[in-house]
Image 1: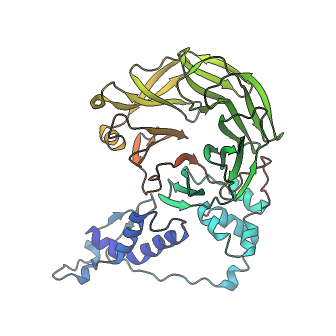
Image 2: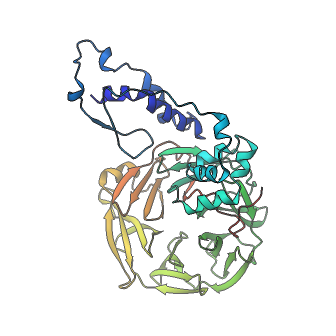
Image 3: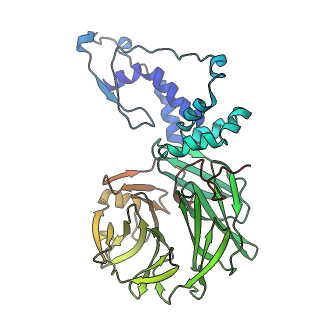
Length: 446
């Protein structure tokens, strides 16, 4: 029955799926599963009329079958006898006279990755996508939704793929504008992406918007040392800050430096107190930067508003093998890690910090089937990061990605093969055209 229902929709659904495929930046080599599913959709004749001995059901007895088109979460209803309507031909003369404000409002509702491709249609559309009125419509609409950005270098050529969670599709975005020294993916916030690297003996950082293909190198820091960085975007005033903590090799004698896009310079702040860090991984939550410490045991928090460090005596769960701090929404801070001394008894768990009691409270456990598929060996390394109460797990050896929705309590695998590269770096990413690398709330000219 389901096959028959699919054939009645093949004409309309294939065209929409093919349209999505044509607008993406991933080729069939990057997404073999998606390409094979599209090619196979029209290979079989499964219509009821083409079967020998099939029953001719009357309209009153037709059964309604729920189907889920590729790339969409909304359920649609189809019947066996539904007619396929031809595509409506659009008159160029009519659409050419469309008012510009209405065109801006229409384009603002198109997924940003499609708009990225539409820039090459004509000079008028390219100029519209840089127009302040279009950006105003774009900024007032709800966000496209969370995406995963993967970055790696292939023969010194930067490669970037973005997985859209709402569309469940991979897209390629060119990053040929990046200089050769931009090697480390620092992270992303508010539509901007930060990279760092060594240009000879000079440690540098840059901020870019992959959609607008604009970028700028940040001024030199006071101390030329390879530092741990994290970027934070303020959506209210369209500014961003980059925080540099201790030296990447553990030298804590360097003062904390903060870059502010509003004044375009680095300022010096308090030196981090002498502590023994568990990991260099950081999480920014509620105007505070958090790091794990072994001695004294707990957390070190840097308050961005005051510029001072303070210790939080939050003891870690017993038998914790490795832990990652993950920032959530509404002041929520999560701790993710493996528990268990023996490989057969290990499990992945998630805790949330109770700020009032200064204790970690367990909120979820990874089901065993997902844990065994993600980490086949107890010594395998994994990465963990989060955004908006979504936690992503990536396995270095397995090339897999798993996402946990804290609010919905749902686990789901990441489709596609862009995580297969062993040296790929991954972070959450929110595609936005109105995110400016100059931090002044204005779309930069190219």
